[in-house]
Image 1 (cartoon, one colour):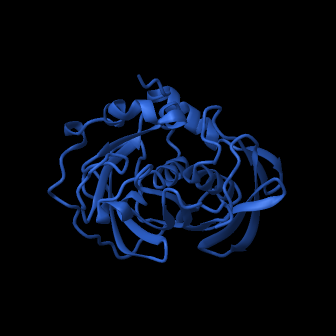
Image 2: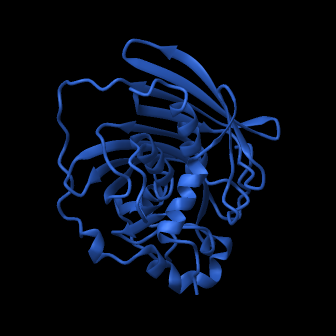
Length: 296
């Protein structure tokens, strides 16, 4: 049986995880959950880095994009220090660079740009129409239960994001090749009314299933008999306001894979069909059995 922390308690833990401790001007400290894999989840460090950047910009500016690189695996047993550099404050935009450090070395860095809200042109493409509603799909816990005996720590970690797969998840055996990997996702409880926190929660969630879009193209799976992977870089563009505790369709596909690297893109739509964010990630993908080098 699976007994991970879910629902509002898991969301509250995520909010606490993103509430960094200020050490000095432009320096913050973040922790990992008590129950977590040895390697820090990439969405966690990206979300925490965005929180650090957001606390160092004028309050009238909201994040519109971030670009990040995962340099080394993070150690979940020790805190992460986030150093924020003020790159520029203009009349409309602010840019910050965040470096995440553990054991005296950089594990991650990110540039984030914030904008004072303005009016302008407005358009977006149509959301896919052939998608089942999230209420019609099985929960992640229901999906995981048949394979609970081989999940290890992955069956015990908190699940603050409610994820509903439209197709076959990447850890199911013998799944068909699919050109898309679509999931509905939302925080599994209520978040505070802070737009910056909702952007950070989506950043956290955006690293959960994106590389699965690469494997789905080939009908491949994660784990024994399949592949192991790691995020290399990650970019998010935030187009419109949204709530991360309301359903968002994560519409993923992979335009290219080569050289043990796979590129995945995703468009994020609200249930009402608004395109609120776009995500792009390249990841390292190697057959299980090959050594996944920590230094990439």
